[in-house]
Image (tube, rainbow, N blue to C red; front, side, top):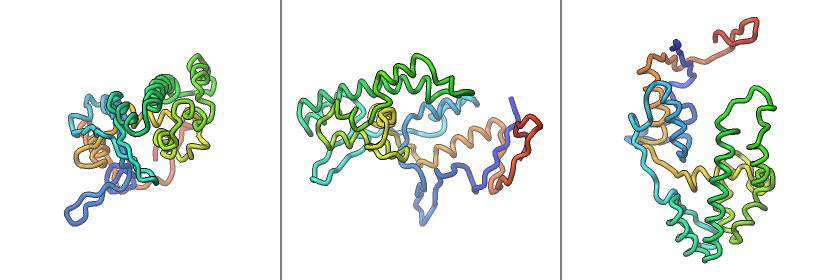
Length: 237
């Protein structure tokens, strides 16, 4: 093992996933949507823990409800049968069938991107080359997201429902590559969760697990500069 010291400018862990305690209420000041909790488990596994040891996660069913300017609304379910039925109620049989095709495409897109591009470190751009890059191109990942989703759904409301997630990355859907659709997979397929105690409970749990494993925290401490070795490696702050 290594001796670990976390230097944090804030008064506690969490960064932008902070919390305000006000008049008996706890208010999250940052993220409002939690997806892919297995990635948090991967981090906690470094100290022999998992998120469920410290935080209760509640799967949200439906994940959320979308309302449109024309007064219509649709619940977003991560269960394929429930969502198929909801799309059918909302927009008919053809759109329900299109949803299933879109879901299958999103699942394949995620598999390709996760193993090679998301859950990977690269020392060189050459690391991007390989069969998964070709597969991503074959899936249409480098085409426009607007055009790609239109192959599955004709209803403009549904196209918006499954493409607005590109905004999470700061990209308008009409300007996004179809590769950004992987974000839609995360909340419409993989699911949305609520941590008991609010979103801040997640970074607090991670900090508590690290502290229990021997990590030290220097809260309220700003880093002004890094000291580097002759080889350029950071050796001190």
